[in-house]
Amino acid sequence: MSAQQLKQDSPWRQYICLACGLIYDEELGDPDSGLPPGTRFEDIPDDWQCPLCGVTKVDFELFEKPAILACDKGTVFNRQPGVVIVGAGLAGWSVAEQLRQQDAEIPITLISACNGDIYHKPELSIALSRGFEQSELVRESGVDAAQRLGVRLLPNTLAVGLSPALHQLRTTRGSFHYTKLVLAQGSKPALPAELPAAVCWRVNTLSAWSGLQRALAKGSSRVAVVGAGMVGCELAEDLARAGHQVTLIDRDNTPLSALLPEAAATRLSSGLAKLGVKFLGGQAIRAVEPRADGSRAIVLASGLSIEFDQIVAATGLVTDNRLARQAKLDFNRGVVVDADTLRTSEPAIYALGDCISLDGKPCRFIEPIKHQARAIADAVLELDSEAYAHNAPVIRLKTRSVAIVLHGLPSPDGHWRMVQEDADGLIMEQVSGEQVISRLNLGSPNQSCAA
Image (tube, rainbow, N blue to C red; front, side, top):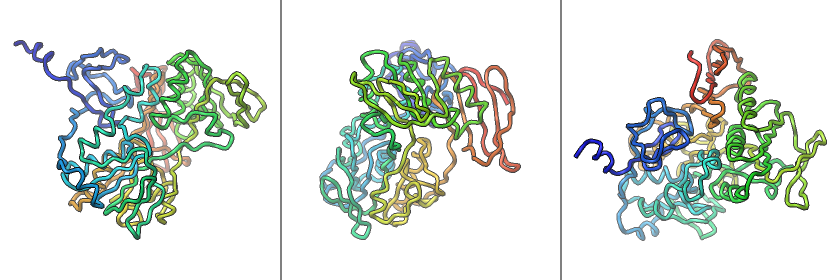
């Protein structure tokens, strides 16, 4: 049998991006990037880029789900306190995976406000233009993942109270005692008063994305995206590529103003405009008014009124502090955790992901989660391990019109300087004192400036 025949007959493999967690499936390929279904990983060109974060294939590794290590007697877990995890997003499931890889029998209970299905949240901001359905975004059902890992999953269950002295978590399905508790609650959209939840979509969960997708399925719609941060810019481009008439509205004069200097923000705005996205900067929203035909009018502070079929809010995230407040956990824009162990101010409670803060800064990036989960699993199981080392993740905007990569978080006190600029892109550095604290590379998806 020839080598080519062996390749064709071998099972399809999956490869995971070490930077953002995207999984490349050989069976599905990546048609939007020119890789038809059935493209083997070794046949991918070396300059192919991850469609989510822009790294190349050298930053991917073979992805294999761990074998089931849990003992078959799942009912034993239910009668012991063990580890209780609140939240079934990527953070919660990552902790369950890490615990189970190192201990086959420790009882694990996972409390989820949704059905617990596993999906990759960053994909939501590029999924509409690719024509995905909700089922295609689910990597593994919550039921299957729980069975694979020997985890007791309680879907559609809300955590309503926490008593550290009793080691007790209260939920809408009763109370649960724990030996260790892990908070992986994520964060929720921060909506200003002028944008009531009833009048706008918030694309922060798969179910919310699915609702927007169904609402837009009838054809081209007039869509307002309020908030020109990372998610807002990515959604605006995705909606435009899906054939909708998109207006991006922000209080600041330029998109991504908290991260980008004016020269870069101007290029981003131009790239979005080429796709048909209209940017309204320096505009505060005064109110949203319903119309008889089902549309809604956004009334700006200037008095201008604009009608839209759908409104999407991308106005930032906030951590729900209810459990932390009841348990008297230290809280500062998120649950305060020890930088080395991710332990909260209560010794038996840990936290990770979107719901935590380090040095007063929320930690809302995907890349650190796998390292945080490993650190928590080691601490819970009392294993010797290195302390968790938090590094500022590389920020990659998932806009295909203009590729943007930021190394290091910019500071309001820093000074931007141009390193290189040409027709294809630019490179800039932000300096604080004599130290370079951030580096920006902006260019087209297939071209970038060389330093």
